[in-house]
Length: 432
Image (cartoon, rainbow, N blue to C red; front, top):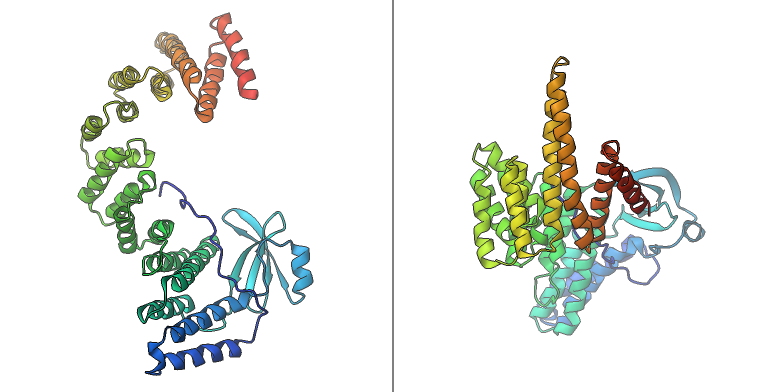
């Protein structure tokens, strides 16, 4: 996987404002509403099904009804004197303090705020949210109005999504995928008016993490059908799914489609190069895949930047430089073309260093020749990095160019006083 869990904003879990009640009371309310729904006469009334849905929702929220996310630990402990400390646990690289309650575990962030709530004892068994959603959909089918059912379904979608995020944080990726699936699936059931595209993507992403490639492929393809591409990452992930099934042709087709639409996506490009190398095909063929994109976007200099990256990756440096220069013909102020030209020089330098390291100690003349050549190559990278810094409006690109200029001039400081002076300049800029 090339990108960590895209757009995982914590959805607000469904929490109704009431005091926690005994599980038996929750079950009794559900059973009563369920019995009414099974009565032939009552089953024709929207109110019957709305009542059943609300009973399930209330039961779902009951274990956490006395827990407020975002409160500080001191306030929480004053309100929950039966909380038992379970020490510190590390989740996703962050240390949380865990407390156990009869119905849930809670986790406090390093800032001392209640950040995660994990239900350990649901009031009613089974897929409570799913049963609630089914009841609301049935209410809609027998005559309930959109304005009454739609908000309830959206609450359920958000609750599934929130539970999925909690499962993800706790490292249970299979459960996370199941919960994201619930959010995705119910978000497209009438009359729910808001499709949760993030849930479709995250369902597939977490499924891929647990090697459920069938579900991952299904839901990534649903992302495409929904017009949701995550800046091209859907295609890169689909190629991973295809390769997991040893289907190199499908992987190549996914990546080819992705490259023409998202030529700047690093994951697509990396996967393509690796795939061509693994199948012993000429990576230069990837350049041909850009032709259609160039026809559609002749004034897009980034297409030539991608071409240059491909050629640079296979060490065809002259062709790479030609591609970057073509990008500058399209846009003389395209910062990444200058960046590409400079990095080609650095790659030439890496090759020279590698050759120097491979020399026998007696080959000092060859070593001196290569040293002189290395100086020339490093010096040739300075001008394009300077141009990149000059024309770029991207602070990250400017910072990278400045850092390279600092290091290059430091390497060359003993060659000429001008490099020592330039080093001091760029060192000061980087330090700002």
